[in-house]
Amino acid sequence: MISDAQKDKIIQFAKKHVAENDPYHGMEHLEETARLAVELSKSEGADAEICWVAAMLHDIRKGKSGDHGTEGAIEAKKFLLEIDMDEGFAEKVKDAIHFHNKGFNGGPVERQVLWDADKLQLMNLEGFKKRMIPYWIHKLGETEGIRKSIYEYYFYKERFHTETAKREAEKNTEEMEEYFRVLRERINER
Image (cartoon, rainbow, N blue to C red; front, top):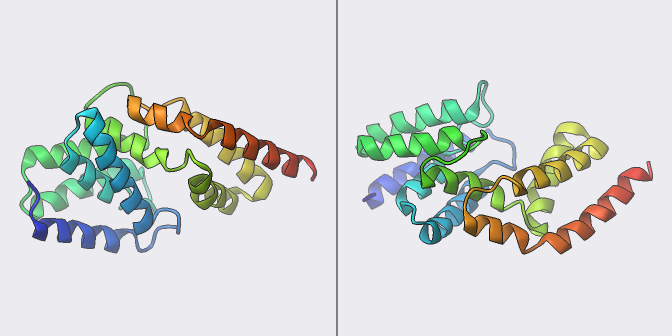
């Protein structure tokens, strides 16, 4: 069980490390991912504490060189051991973080929950407009950013691991399809 002191240290560590991330991968994203991870963990039989910690730490290396999942997993485990978290617990958090930005089949349910929680927030109009579109437009420019955003939506939607996330992603399909039609018209007018 995570103590309140450990929880506070995890939050402070996350804040410090995501301060230099782009605006789409800061504390707000970590907190939303953690909320969704805990929610998914309940219906999927995952350890909610592992899911919460992994979600809070999953993007601590996002703006740095190297693979942020791999590098972040190593750094997160080291940090968790420093604050006296159990080795087995820290290893499970490391596994989830390592795989959150990679393709995989199966594996521990906590790994699946983190991957799904990280992407699920993009499967509705609000999240898509708030994070997906601006992120890719910032990286690629408007036309290519819109194309990439729509591609990523379908890419993620087809790859959810948990049954709960799959059901949630389906809920907004009609609304999203209509929005994509408008976006495609916008970029085709250029």
